[in-house]
Image (cartoon, rainbow, N blue to C red):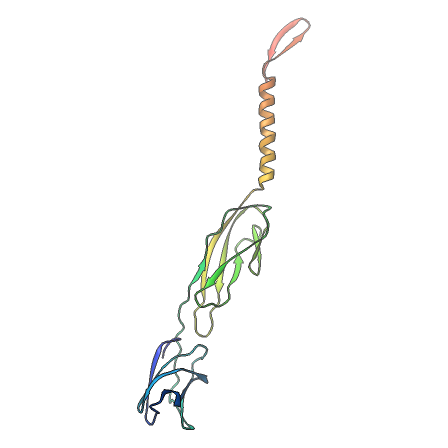
Length: 193
C-alpha cells in the first residue's frame, strides 16, 4: 500500500545486488529501483498504476506478489488568484489557475447570467455576482480538488455617467428656475419648482 513517489521496500530472495538488474513493475508500470540487496529492493511507486500485483524480474525470471498493492490517492492544491471587479460591457478576459500536480484545470460559473465561461475565457453577461470554480478532477494518483473566487460585475460605467449627467442637469435646472416670478393680470407672485 502506498501513494505516488513513496518509498516501497519489497522483500524476497534471489534479487540482484545491482539495482538496474531488478525490473520492478506495479500493475505493469515500471518503477525506479533505488537500491537492492539479495533479499530486498527499495523503489518508489511510479505515477500511473492502479491497484494490482507487483512483479520483479531478475535474469529473465519473474516473481509476482500474492496480493495486490493498494494505491492511495494524494491531495493536490490549486492556486487561483483573486478576480478584479469588472464593469458590465468590459472585454473578454482569461482566468489563470494552476494545480500543484500540473494537471489541467476546468472553470465553471455559478451564475451564467452574470458571466459565462468557455475554456478559460470569461464573457460578462450582466450585472451581479457569480462564483467562479476552478476544478482539477484528479486521476488514478491524485484526488479531485476545487478552488473558488467571487466575480463582481458592476453596471455599465457609460450608462452610469449618462444618468449622473441627466440628474445634474435636472438639479441645475431646478436651481435656475426656482426663483421665477409670474405676472398675471397685473398680480405678481413668486413661483418655486
